[in-house]
Amino acid sequence: MAAVLKAKKYFGSISNNQYQHASAPTPVSSVVGVGSSDGGTSGVGHDSGGDGVEGEEQEESSSSSHGTSERPKVDDELTIFREQWQRELETALPDQKQRSGTSLWKDASSREDEGSNKENEAKYLFLKGVENEQNGTLYEAIQFYRRAVQLVPDIEFRLYDASKPKPRDRQDTESTEDRSETPAEQDVKAYSDDDDNDDEGEDLLSRLQRFFSRSCSLCVPQYEQTMTHISSLPMEIVLYILRWVVSADLDIRSLELCSGVSRGFYLCSRDSEIWRLACLRVWGANCGGLTNYESWRQMFIDRPRLHFNGCYICKTTYIRHGENSFQDQFYRPWHLVEYYRYLRFFPEGVVLMLTTPDDPMTSLAHLRQRTPRNPAVLTGHYRLHEDRVIMVLKKHGTQGKISGNNRYRARHNRATSSDLEEQNYHLELQINSYRNRLHTQLAWQGYSIFMKLRNGAESTSKFELPTNRYPPFWFSRVKSYTAESENPLQ
Image (cartoon, rainbow, N blue to C red):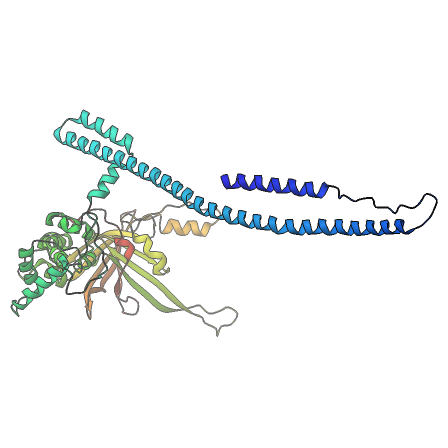
């Protein structure tokens, strides 16, 4: 600021001086030739006139020489002033920046110190509240909690973040010789060392059971976890979770998928109690004991049974002759008939059957619930007898209004559906295996329809079962049937 004031004063003085030089009149001597009053010329007047011109020239030369001598002087002073001004600015600006920087740093450091002190005080108060809560003095604990939250509103989350273990860096930046082995690698190494001492005739389940008896851990996390890992759960809880995985619908496929997670899950999925409950769920009182099988799992796999996580589908296709045309007696059409039969079984003995020309994409949704809404779905019960499935299905009666205009339809309904009181379908199917697909085929063994009229008359119609008209049922898994578990396996 001092340099700026000096510059203003100096430039003001220079402008005033220049103004004075410019406004000062130039002294010009009025040299005029003096003649005689009588008009004589003579040589004095001429000489004096010459002297006047020379005087003017001298005045002009003196003024120009004075101006040229003043300009270098002013330029030199301006140059000196600029240099001095620049030196003062260069010395003043760093000091000002340094002073401002130090002041900002002091303000920031003071704020950080104030924030850290406030957070430390809040931590102390919150921990005191925890201590009082553990000792049973809840009122004092609430007071400490309230004071801590008033200082730092999220003090609880900060303490939790500071107390939980930090995840280890998953990228191996060190060499394999220098870095320490993870728990998972140590577990694998111990298992590989144990394999060297195993007997060749020992099966996988016995080997894993022996290894699990030494390690006593379900599985080992590969990396450090920020939350509780599933390996911390006791074995009883894991087995109960697997019962929910199997569920009351016997989704054994999901249980087998869980066995591929780790050695601990493999042992849990081979638990004999789970497989015993599954066998009882399928065969009930006819389950029997382990006389012909080594384990409950082997009984469930080898013994003929039904699948519950999908649907059995039978596609029937045949050609039917049409009637002759009344215009052309030599023309007789042929009709290609195609329709589907769907069967879905439930473990408690309920069976659903649907006969429709619709493809599986639109028909399988009607068999999802045990109590279907579609009246075309037949409901019934089934029983397993060795490798045979015996079913009894009942057709739901539907009473509709008959239009009075259509007399033929009214007479037809009175002669058929109005007199029909009960109609049951009896099916007998045989469980077969095809190549490596166990129990996936149901072959027709018997089919009859029992009808009872309102007047008490009963009739039974048995059908012949040619293979072209009654092809076997094939099992197809439906993912939506086992997407959720409503009840555990019991």
